[in-house]
Image (tube, rainbow, N blue to C red):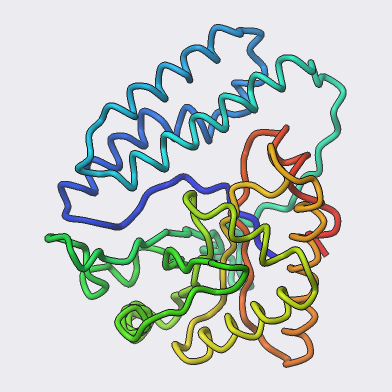
Length: 287
């Protein structure tokens, strides 16, 4: 199981749009994601107000990049609440679980080999918008993994995927012809789909149906695995979602083992400690 603290850059739109996303990410993601350790070390409750101000500024950025704005708006709101909770609880004695980090290491001939993972999220083109970044324009060597975003969950099961979207999945997978080491995964969820996960994971029957359907899609499009982007189980919601999400991943792993499948499974998790503690059973997930 791989865990990724996502930095939030989407390959969607023209290079101008990509530039916009990067510019916004530089002013938000670096503050909200990467520096969680520095945030929690500050005994500065005024910083919560700064996050709230950032939330308002993002909201006023306009409708041209509605998806990105919505995602950043929701993320700053959630992380601002998490920071407030952390400061209120004064969790100086909280114990966290450390996960191994893969780094460059020397090979048998003494030459360092690249073993890091550069995971990129690629948002599917919007058929109604001009200037979208098409799969063929993605550099096959830019990333080690491409997570194609997003498949949706509706009414407790995987939303039917039409032939056009299936074709886009296949076109992204075709990049592997130029870079066989590239891994292409299908990402499930996204910031706008937190509710579907709760219903889908609630029962063994619905989890089993989802696993059956998603594995069929992966096989049909020759994808290398799937990524879960649930924002966030049991956070400000039903506490049983934490248990149900763990059950889903354990049942998925059991089915993959039964099939002797090498499919990859990853989870895009939150960085703030209060969300991690509420949302994820780390020891169970690490198994």
